[in-house]
Length: 113
Length: 113
Image 1 (spheres, chains in turn purple, green):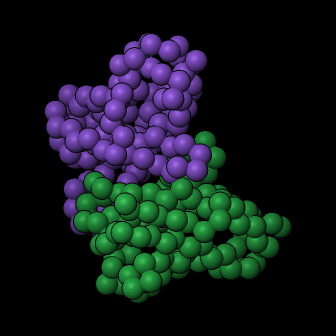
Image 2 (cartoon, rainbow over the protein chains, first blue to last red; image 1 turned 180 degrees about the vertical axis):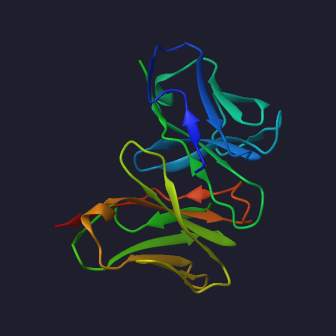
């Protein structure tokens, strides 16, 4: 089975802190994604990567950056955390082909105080 | 702007009945439509994918329809069980590569024993 592992289930950070969220997948997927999920808003794409060192902005990239130095690992970085970044963060991965679906991690609930 | 609406935030039905969930979209021409299941505190799990040229897709007790004229997908769970209780998300994909999925906010289904 495909496994997408997010490093933390829960995180509590202070405003202004730099925050790293890590995601690792074990299926050699080309594509990796970071979403945030907020009540009533659904999942919104922050960034995705289709290859090592490649990245594309999603719908809400402001305040975030990403890093993909190895194929299996995709990191989301909050340079200076703010309270409006309190959310559930979901990592996903997929192959590049027709009919593709996403495989999600269990999510990280981030609270910024 | 693109908009995806899933009928009612919450749906309660009696065990054994058929649950029908609706996904409507505007200003969008998806090539594919996907349905995911999400349990509390977990990431979404892929259920079914249907292409724009397919009218219907089935998998065990699940059935999905896709009407590009009405801009609507219906998701049916027949002979529903309490274990089917979860939030169900629809996602639109313009290309089939899963790189540009746009998610609805979900419908929370509760199957009452």
